[in-house]
Length: 288
Image (cartoon, rainbow, N blue to C red; front, top):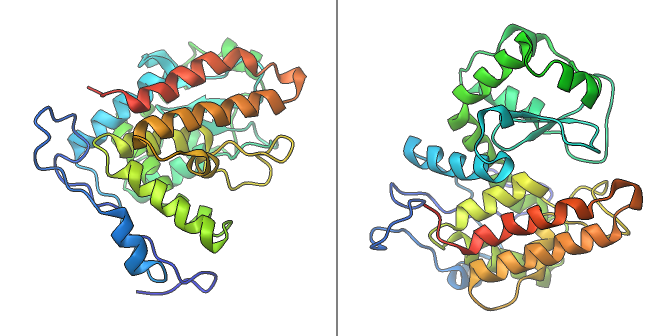
């Protein structure tokens, strides 16, 4: 196994067994890791393994993420929120900027399309040819909402839900090494410990996958207000020592509340805080 020239740390990702992400009332057959032992024994040499999801697991997590983003509505697979400069597409509302435009938030929809192609999926013709979102702004997008291209796009997104969930899992797999590169040695131990405290819970991977898809890794310098980020890294930094999912949920709400307080007044981000907070509270509730 090759070592990264930048950092000789490899991440032992929790391998998901058949029942790992199921809401199992009996609590049987769940595979867990012991994060303290991992940290003590392997702080200088992790093994990195992929997150593997069975189709049933992928469908379940996909349903939860889709519910969080748009209430599980078919029409919600294609959205453009008021006050934003990009389309939000798929179950995870992956960001897609119009052709020739960029912004402060990490664009993920083109990466999703590349992933689907790598997995053998076929893109609709207009997506295969696109160099950016073909609708230039929200007004244009909404005018085309019931048109043939948007209808084809929603159909494609509904047919590739498992691909989208696996893409979200891959993003989480890559997130931990990215976060650790920005940490001191002492902080690195804290981030690893809190990551695995959450990951070993019955719905821990749902919480981690949903949040990193929702608000990113927290490693992009562009995703800062007054020097403060709002991604997974910042949430793991904020966690206390209580119940892992409750701590993760409360830390996420604090981080997002700070984001809103630091945000430019013109964005009026406080209109979204109640919905964001409700989403984060689901992380500490049993999911069915």
